[in-house]
Length: 115
Image (cartoon, rainbow, N blue to C red):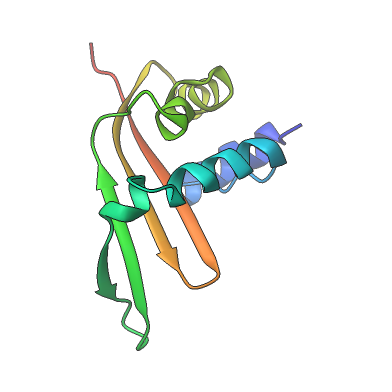
């Protein structure tokens, strides 16, 4: 399981954490399939120069859908971790899918609820 003290320290220091093993291999496969499916998130990506002479593709969205990617923001494992790190209820702010040759990163940004 995740090392809570390390996660808290890293989050406080860096403002983000990379949580290896948060998703199972099967869940990662479903996310990858969803991203690359016809009409999926990757089909809505646009290209940008990454500053190193390579092209990166990016897709942004503000509302979690009812698909696999939307579920990432809702599952207790993800939501609970975010609530624990941020110290209260969270809501989905936006998601970003970054694609480079050989690398896909999914970033789900959350914000703490002020209600």
